[in-house]
Structure formats: structure tokens, C-alpha cells
Image (cartoon, rainbow, N blue to C red; front, top):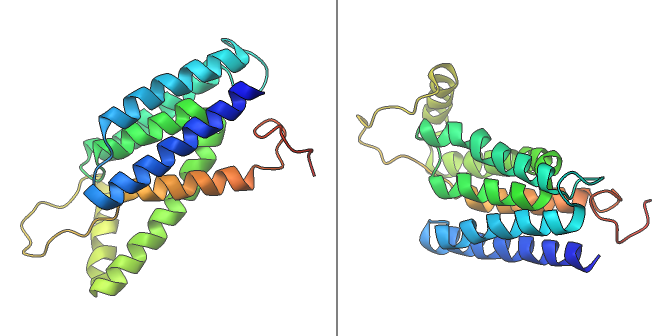
Length: 184
């Protein structure tokens, strides 16, 4: 039980640090994500062994790491996302496993979409952004930098952090994810 508490404390330290650095410096640093990946994998191994019951074991953590790395890596390769965001998703997956990372990515996508929509409305570029998004969905490539306008970006690391918190709060009554409280 104390190792699971340590896992959640480590996860929250990762999330708070990443949110701060993404907002303050526009980066999520390797010196934060790499140790977090190692800590998440190690704690999951200590909790459930290699393939123990439930979500917290080494196999679930490795699959979560790979899902974060490969799932968001597609967006990095296409130029739509930074490498720090990808490594943050991989680190979150190493902490919470693949099943809950899927939920965290879902909620993060909602948060990121709301942030992006608010930004394009605020900047008065809604129609141009909708055209660019449609073009990206068709080609999976970001537009060439032939326009005079600066591209609009959001701190997706912050969206990952908020989406992971959202997932955590939505799963409080799931005894497999959060066994501290009795199931409702």
C-alpha cells in the first residue's frame, strides 16, 4: 500500500513539475521525464511484480510507456507536437499503465481541444484553423511555413497534466486504480 502511495506521489510530482515548466518555459525537460519513467516502471514492478493482478505491474507499466511514446510519437513525427509532450505521456503511462493512460489521453485531448478552440477564437483565426485542421487530418502533415502569420500553439503538456488529473478523479471509485477508498 505504501508503494502505491509513493507511486501517486511520484506521479503528482511529475505532473506539477511538468505543468510549471511547460507554462513558464514552454518545455518539458528530459531531466524530469527520464527519471520519472524509471521511477514509474520500478514502482509498478515493486507493487505487482512482472505480471501481477490488477493494473499496477511491470507489463501494464511498460505497455503504458509504449502507448504514450508511440501514440503521441506520431504527432511528434508529423511536427504537430513537441518531444517533451511525448515523453511526458510515456512517463505518465509508466506510472498509471496502459488502461488508465488511454483515459488520461482521452481527457487530455478534450482539454487540449478546448484550449485550442479558445486560442483560435481569441486570436480571430477560427476559419483558418479549421481549414488547417482538416488538411492535417487528410495528410497528417503540418502546413509548410509559407504563411506570414505565426503558428498558434498550446502547451499540450498542461493539457496532459489536466487530463491525467481528470482521469484520476474520475477513477477514484475504481478499486483497481485507487484501492484506498471503498468502491461506491
